[in-house]
Length: 463
Image (cartoon, rainbow, N blue to C red; front, side, top):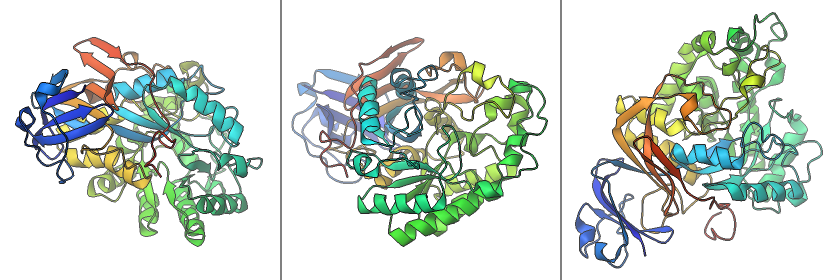
């Protein structure tokens, strides 16, 4: 019949009970009040409405003051299917997501084949049925894309649209970008942009001697090659084109204060990844090619500037750009190793650790990972702990932190750039009221693959 979560602490510090009926939150009230008939205020301040008390429930979870958050929405993952299942699959990627408190993921189009046609979308959506968490599927833009069939599908967004080549070689020219933005605007589909201007890369660095392979490589040369200036210039161009087409543009993985400011000044939204938030060029001495990604790691000074903008509200969203590669692939030389790092399982734990240490508020973590992604991309059933919303919930003991080890994580690639960092991991993750992940000491269990496309008819109030 339902579930009652008793005595949980919301991000703003209030203690509450939460009743779940079916897939939705039925009531949110002051702690102890759902044992009776008096339903109190929801997280958003509105009155919650639902019938029945705790006596009508068949499952009771005693939160005992633990933190209850809305499930995180990671709007930028690469789960690698179809085409690269040796790196990740929808099963392994969604298990990692659930274990990290992520209840919705959005997959990017640079798979094989790329998601640039209606048929390619259909194949990826079929594979995504193996997901333990809800999902969205983005469509891609290349010179041979089929916008008519692609935009007729229930896309989450168009993008990431690559303004410079990255994994999958999907970089496009300015005129094709402008055409894609106009088509997306006409279809009322958001556009997510990978903003780097390749004309501003430092060609004098490209192909230079970068030392050994893997962790022995001089990966700082990658940061020197794909310059910080290339990001801000591409952001400015991307938002200018979007404004001309009256399109909604979201800038992916901004890695510099200048890029963030350019997006904010133009009224566009942007995201920051955990690796650009917590790592800098100084870490490349240890990471080598395991720290090669696009855009690359920046100076410590710029990293601090990015963190400041995350903390003060300038940045809208934290998203991971979860991009796993095998250790064998990462053990190549710098100029041959693939770009990308895994991160979907460690995003929320790293942010919660920052909050535990007082560097971010728990409310800011909630907004960056749940409220804001839902608002930016039009997911009215996601992102908040309120009556009527999907019961996507994460229960966390704020005082229980542990060392991050790649061997303990669930991505197929088996490694992390955050080896040795501290993180606060979930005890319980619910997706639409059902257990997707549960941890009790060292024992873990996962739920069944019940993820749904958040843009389909089963979510009729989604836009």
